[in-house]
Image (cartoon, rainbow, N blue to C red; front, side, top):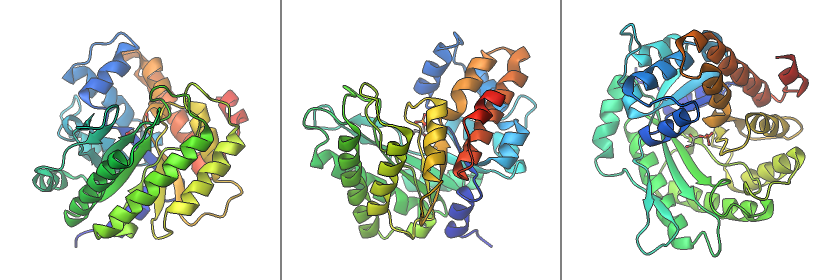
Length: 341
Ligand code: 13P
């Protein structure tokens, strides 16, 4: 029997588990490896990701699914075991980033539109056959002088809706990710401006998902938190939590099973603290969890440093962040737990 989209989506966000975003493109993973002076090759990328996927305690207790880049979906561990099998053996779901990146949008200076729709139906069949049961597509919205524009929001929103419909037709749960950047340029916007833009974007996205006949019970939303720009940071944890919950309640229908945030350039501990605050003291119609890239991986990359003798240290760091974020998704994280580790 084929799995129901609703059941896969529910499993992705249940019981405090969250998603590991390990779908850095070849260009992005190179930037991450540059910070530890490691050359990015197919083998170093394999070794790094094998370290993460073989962190059993984190994978079985915390990570409901892993977002992979295409290379990794078809890649094997050093001993020849397909990564997809390692992820599934941990009870986690393999997923795949299917967009081909944010490209400059014609006639919209300073704005991008995400590409990847042409041929997507055929690619999704191949990904499904390899074991992927969810996908990700990221639209990118920058806040700047006079930006974003309606024409750019609409273009990204319609692409997200067309992608989501194609995924569902292929038996794959779409993660719908419209990211309003915290770390864009100039990054000086206030939390109030972030709230205004994110509300506008999410209203547009849910209208387009509806028009595209997407089943909201079979998707997961991956939004930014409502937070000031990277060069204007000042809002408290309580303010970020309150404003984010307010904007989401105003825009995300309760039929959506779960919301899994991106970390967007927040420090690892901030991303955890914000998530925990949202899960304590608010009455919410959906699960709120994590789909972090940097906030789950930064400390692990650093502890590993590209050296085989540091794999255990890298795994300890990854396990710690995964456990902290799972506590946060249950509203049970406390700062003292960071010190204790
Ligand atoms: P960050 O958590 O590092 O923002 O990455 C999440 C992601 O998948 C962005 O598309």
